[in-house]
Length: 254
Image 1 (cartoon, rainbow, N blue to C red):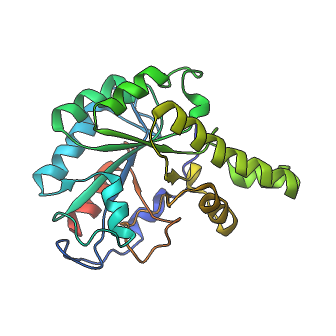
Image 2: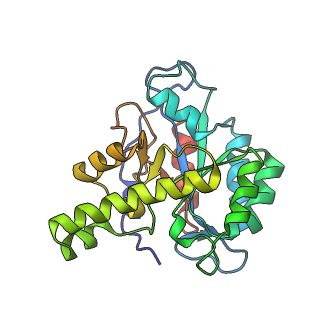
């Protein structure tokens, strides 16, 4: 289970109020989920009921869900504007609950989703998606598949344990092998990356760019904006205990 050590920042970071439509400094909330569980919410989990309520809350408050790729085009200066009050939905890892519980809700509400997948878990680990399920999700046109490294490593620990040369090869494998497998399996380009555990630094950013990633996302409880580096765009991670506070921040500053 992944360790969450940065949630307290959510209540400490100030957020400027800004207009969304045709704003050259547009702030885009990118929200992040992991796993859905109907009975036992955990540190990385919300119930399907709360997940659906969260999405409806945003829709009912005038937010427009857009594909992450459209937000990336805007952040890169390739798109002049976005709809008023845009918001992006992302999901990390590749839990089977994406297919079992999330898919019906996404289809009903017609919301685009980007799945950040680490292929080392697909069709191999218990409670994770199969390649067949992932392809079915992609074929709906609502799910885009992007990279989350190969095995979801903790790069800080790996750097302490490995020699500099071994660590460099390890990082390249995690970034390049993941991209290659996903592109071959899904038949589409992988240009976006989510950092495991939100861990990144200048060295990792350079390697990600060399591997062919155009933009990378972390966890920062701030809205994505052109002021952030392309390899350091923040997201709001939604977990059961703090989802209400998180959504209040997003709504209050829209």
